[in-house]
Image (tube, rainbow, N blue to C red; front, side, top):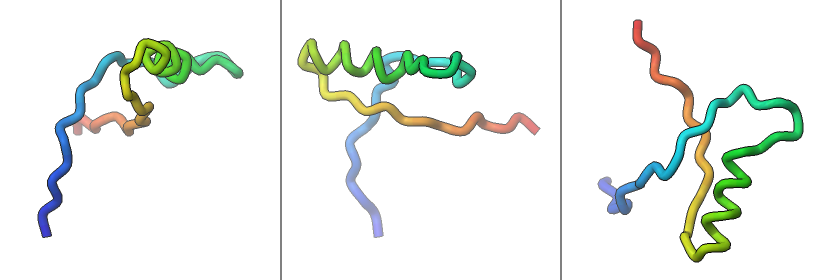
Length: 50
């Protein structure tokens, strides 16, 4: 069964190793939402190169 999902656009990438209490991806998303952009933060596992 195929699903019709809209394409995703990556607006920005953030490193996962931020200091405790720091959420730069969430803060960026909040800023984009305040400007009227519908955004979601998605955490992806890195692709193994082996």
